[in-house]
Each structure stands twice: as C-alpha cells, then as structure tokens.
Picture 1 (cartoon, one colour):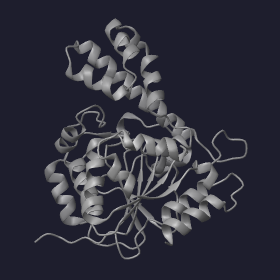
Picture 2 (tube, rainbow, N blue to C red):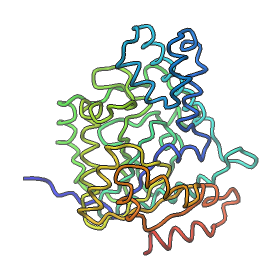
Picture 3 (tube, helix red, strand yellow):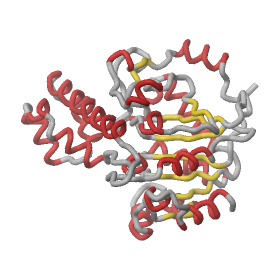
Length: 337
C-alpha cells in the first residue's frame, strides 16, 4: 500500500541566485574560476573550448563525455572541485555585521525559513544549490533542520569556528540497502512537528557518491546522474510527490527555470494539481517574463506565476533589521493569501 504523506502547503525552492545574495557565485562566475585555473590553462584544447562556450556545465559535459584525454578530464574535474571549494570559502567566511559587503539580516532570513516548517505536516525546503550556506548559517531555536538520509555537513564545531572541510568530512551517500534501512527506521511520513526537511536535489559539496567518489550533479545528463544515485533518486521522487498535491504554493528564489527535469515536474504540477508559483528575483518583471517565453513550456509556467517580488534579499531583510515593506508584501501575498 502506498504511503500517503502530508506535506505543508507552502514549499520553498532555491537556486544559485539565493546564495548570490551572500556573495555566492553564479554560473558565469564559476566559468571564470575554471578558466583561470592553472590546471586548465596547461591544456590548449580546454582553453579553446572555454573561449567559445561560457556555460561551465556544458563544458564539463563535453569534456567528460567527449574525445578528451584522461589528463584533460582530470584537469576539468579538479578545476570544478576547486571552484566549489572557493564557493565554500565565500560561504563560511560570510558574516552579518555593519559594513559587510552583503549585509543581509540573517536573523530575518532564518525566521523566514522557519515559516516553511510543518505544524502537522512535513515542511519542505528544496534546493538545487550544492553550497553549504544553509548548513553553515541557518540557526533556529524554533525548528529542527533535517537532511533526510544523510548527515549534516559540516558539524557544529566547524560551523561555529568557520572551518573548511577536511578529507574526512566528506561523507558517502547511502547505497540502495542503506537507504532502504534508513527509510524503514525513519520514514518521512512520521510527522515531526516544527521540522523542516532540507532536500538538495543536485547533491552537495561535502558529499561523496554511494561508491565513494566526488559527485556533483552538473552537465547535460542530470536525470541519469540522479537516477544512478539512490538518495538523489529518492529526493527526486519526493519533489514530484510534494508538488503533486492540490493547490501547493511554491516560492522560488534564485532559480532561472533552465533545468528541463525540474521544469517538467513544475509544469506537470501546474497542469494537473493547480500549482501556484511565487518568485523572488532582483530582475525586473519584463526581463523575467521575457526569459520565460524563450523556454520550453514557458507560457504554462508564466500563467502559474501569481506573485512576483522584484527584490534582493537585502531589500527584504535590511541591515538595520527593520520590517521592510517588501517583507510585508510577501507575507500578505504568499503566506496569508
């Protein structure tokens, strides 16, 4: 018999633009880190590719799956891993104080995230982000943050001291048997009040694959990468299941609607279950809706957008910790409507 899970109506979904509010790197900035990497610059063919293709995920896919040498493949892998290490350095060194370059009120952000915990349902926070910003900076006395099926990385000691990860901090994901045992002992339908499930759909920095290799879901075959990893495959099914409930309200921050497998779930949920979309983005509405028109099924996504908030997180959660008009607008439109 299929288990019927209870999910909170309000669901949070973030992409790279979320961490950009705290100094994180977008795709074009990741490209530059790879382009400037010494290992990559030793290879003429890699540099030629980077000068003509500015999508680092596309570059990764071409090199790993193309007619490139093992040394070239190792170099692009090294450059990408080192770029994610730079991103983690940025994340762990971020702080909220007067005069900081990204002085977003983290206390306001944390209270905002707390709202997505379920009272008597499973609270859900889905992300495509592989950085550790939430693990390092989310702090609450109200709710628990749960990463289903995997240990939180880094541990509290390293979070408090803002320490980088070491080799023994990288944890392998569960095998099929491990995951089966976990789900038997900890079914997500065992409702825990005031708990928020943080679900990283594309993996995470600090995770190893279930076979022990470094893994991040990037490139042009994301669906097959996800299906090959038991935990990520389960996460994907949770995403579909959560959005396949009537009248869910998905709040999107920092996602550009460019991943086909993510968009398919969203579009199916719009068509079949009346999913409503609310978007927080610093882009003006003309740029945002024009971009939607250029993607597959963009018109369906556009029609489901019922709330658009053209703000950075700093506009919503200002440095002086005041209650902004932007925050009042979001509360009234999304949480109370």
